[in-house]
Length: 334
Image 1 (cartoon, rainbow, N blue to C red):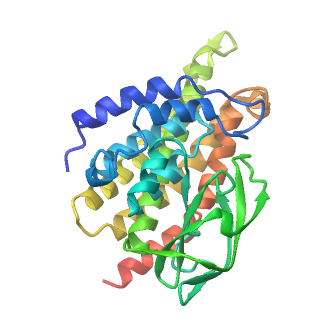
Image 2 (image 1 turned 135 degrees about the vertical axis):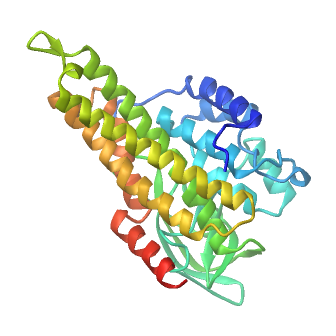
Image 3 (image 1 turned 90 degrees about the horizontal axis):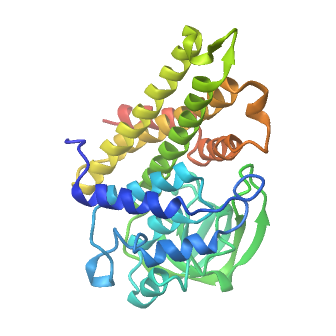
């Protein structure tokens, strides 16, 4: 594959970077909903990039949406970019898609860590069970839920929502289905889970890269014994190790996204990307905190936002050990 960004990717990256630069931040974590930024993203047309042209989208591959997800992670933006980008291509109702693209509705996935073992069952088109800690569920008008190996669209007005507190303070809720009706979708669970996973991996790349840049700036300007910290080999090696981790995350995610866009088998590559995202993001954000010394754990210093997001991402993707075991099962099944 050719890793050179396409014209579409380059243009979307420039626009996304400009818009995310206008993001606002609370004093702690990424709590709340930056509605002003969300309105600008809607106006900029960044949400429907991978939606088919027939439904009013751009008809572009997932690789272009992944650029937006990465930019969102780099900005620690308080908007549901990844969930909406993952859910929109699964929808079939042109009216609902249009409402999402105009900012009048929000649709998010409620798939669980692996989709197939979700806590929701389906019987005669009615769904029962609970999905835990669904990101942005309370702010959504609809959720896409997996049940019985199929996908269903459900209005949030028909479910029970219990807000929960995550480490990053990103809005989330437990979603309980009590025999509620669901509209079946044609997309497969495996495709839905892969898209959500890979967009989350791209988001993790942005989170890790932002943490690395903050750490690199700190060690370049902070002095000890009359020298910048970056002048000491032990510091330089640690920063270089983080850089390698970020690039491994970026390349494995890009490879899996490319295979999905090309219609090739992407299961193994998605598992590899998920492993690197889990392992890499926690390594980089933790090392960035360590390189800052006591300043790294000060919540008045901006680094903590990316650290908290990184820890949640590691677990939401299933954890490094679990994703590695999943990859092993795929390889053993060849």
